[in-house]
Image 1 (cartoon, rainbow, N blue to C red):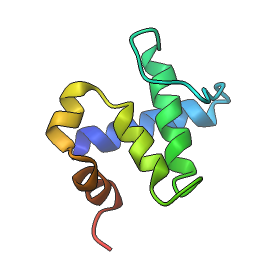
Image 2: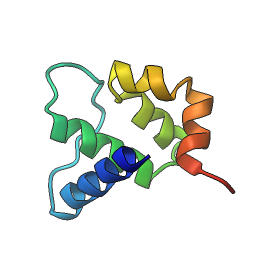
Image 3: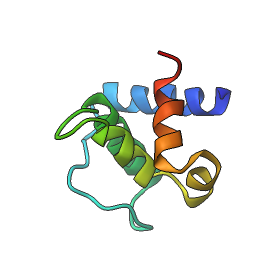
Image 4: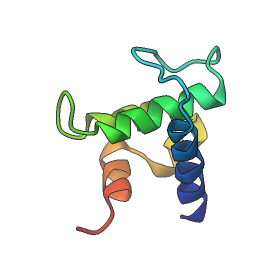
Length: 85
């Protein structure tokens, strides 16, 4: 769990530093790691727009294949991100 938190902290620092936000982009090898993280953080910040948990779904979609295999499927990932209620 430390790894995920460390990545989220790093990504938050990128966003807060004034980095440009990537919008409307599909995941793919042409994106830099920073662009992927910015997309994920922006999605998470606006999680319930345009629908409930859309941001978490975007973060999952932009995760590496290995990360998705370890943390998926999406329903499980959503529970992991939200943590205990």
